[in-house]
Length: 155
Image (cartoon, rainbow, N blue to C red):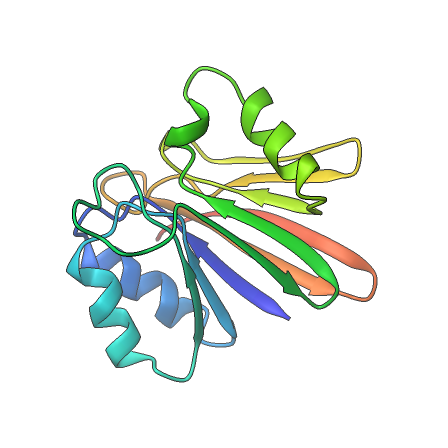
């Protein structure tokens, strides 16, 4: 199963739409927060996708959850924006929370810096930011063989 992961779009509908159109085969779209109307607009354009979205520190008035835990193809996903875990200073607290939740992968945003790492059984993924120049996003492939992550620079 192919999953598109974005974060920190900050109102940039054009970049978000480009990423979705480039990967039309993605069945799930995960947004790690700091979205405005562009998330609702994407959902209207692509109602056939499943969406897992969390609230970021700039999502004032949003009713989205701060943390989302989902099982996809037998793998547990721990999704958050990251600001609650002070992830600009250290990834240790966010990784501890994911491990406590028995997650296979932790997905977050907030820093605008893309990260794809693996540490002692935990995949660590930040898609970066689609909000401006140098925009990045991530792809996840989940299969019976495991989880594969990839950071993609928007063209």
